[in-house]
Amino acid sequence: MKRLLTLLAVTLLAVTAMAQNAKPQPLTQEAFEALCPTPPMGWNSWNRFGCDVNEQLLMGAADALVASGMKDAGYEYIVVDDCWQIDRDADGNIVCDPERFPHGMKYVADYIHSKGLKFGIYSCVGTHTCAGRPGSMGHEYQDALYYARTGVDYLKYDFCNNRGTNSKTAYTIMREALKEAGRPIVFSICEWGSTKPWEWAQGVGHLWRATGDIINLWDGKEDWGGHGMVNIIDLVQDLYPYNGPGHWNDPDMLEVGNGGMNVIEDQSHFSMWCMLAAPLMAGNDLSNMSDDTRRILTNKEVIAIDQDPLGIQAHLSVAMGDRQIWVKQLVDDGYAVCFFNRGETPWDLNFNWSDIPELRATGNSYGVYDLWQHKAIAKSTAKNVVSTIPSHGVLMVRLTPVR
Ligand code: GLA
Image (cartoon, rainbow, N blue to C red; front, side, top):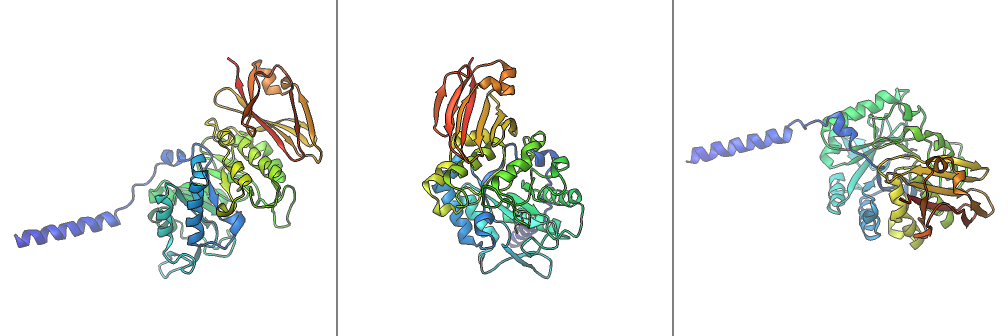
């Protein structure tokens, strides 16, 4: 009997050891591509906190995402950007900053998961990240396994210090490593639009940055390649043919609530990101949000435009100098229309709907619903739309076909 028990115990140990070393079941390309049918939504540490990240910040952001109603509005990823990592050990394993993450990254991931949320992490194609931390070059498979074991659900993968490597090749190596590691991980490509990822990245990653970094300003440009909010809109304006379920143009993370723009401008920023079917990564301090910031970030009716299953990026339909009319087709045969006043004076709008070519072409009439006032403003598009749009403001409406 004793021998039988010993034999059983030894067998059990061997089976456990085998299971622990078992090769993960790789993800098929089909399963990988199906991971991100609507633009991802969440929060990322970079815009507001830069390198000043630690476990309390991430866990506090998870708490605030739930408490603020953002989780309920669809935000799910808590993403730590650069500077969580500090070194590699003798075996080449990535090491997190022990002072800022004393319990390790799995502890943080587990906490985030316990809130019903998902965990995202950051690395880089190059030898070093943009902030000089260890990058993944030569360690792709090892890092991907670490992400899978840690419980990572989203990887933002940057392009600094890449030693002139070909972008498509480099991002494909990491995609293969992620698939091989067997955990579903959304793959966010961040090469700043430098090698036209919209032409090659569908199937390689789920979203790709289409521009240099956003800066916390309405309009502006930095020598190092930063762009103000409206400048980013101009840069992505013609990329709408490349957007769609599972493959998103990324105009960068949100600056809503970071103070560089006023409330009207923040509302326009959020409206336009939703018109563009952009990834919605909040970049503010979630634990200290004004009511206006929360109101903007949690407007479910505006978010529904972003998350529309067709995944169509709006295009600029009518341009009259600083006054623009953007149109986005929706799954219910309706449209989202955003009248965007980029000028310095109010726009006294008195506009015939049939002057928008798409609407004229359908010949339909539509009910008009104001997505910021949360009310129907006209029963049909037979009459002109009349409104005063403040400088830097929007009128954003949803048109639903009158049947
Ligand atoms: C690049 C990226 C940013 C951010 C920083 C981190 O600039 O574009 O979004 O991740 O690196 O160093």
